[in-house]
Image (cartoon, rainbow, N blue to C red):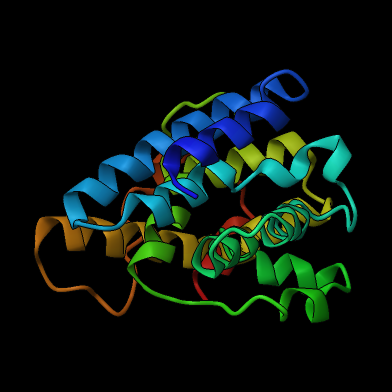
Length: 205
């Protein structure tokens, strides 16, 4: 199981059925590959997970209707390494939405593994728009909220996890720069993205 296999599997399930999701996945994988190369990470783990992170959206794979879990279930059945399966299950702080959907017990079947690889996947996803465009975390949060509507569960969870996504991006950038990794995140520049007013109280907590 390697990057090429991951790309082929993602393409099989997304390219025709969900072309916009396929565009997003290609861009996330490209960013993850760049970060992995600069940080000396195994691409067959983090880049493979980046290719596969949204495969659970494919209609034939829908079971729980929560794509991180449906994708992870496919990979576990198919014999993918646990590191890849767990990264897909937990990508972009998916445990928060899993709990809100009543799927916390299912999510806990997949061990979470905080660290460099998880940060790279989260950072790559959190800075890539639905058409593959590069965005800041603030812009990505705003895009999701506007696309799903503010009261939607996806929007509410995205706002809630924004600080954790921002921290993953910041830690990844700091590691690439070779400097110390800060324990807290800076929100400099968030106001430039004109985030919706209800995002700001979350960032202040």
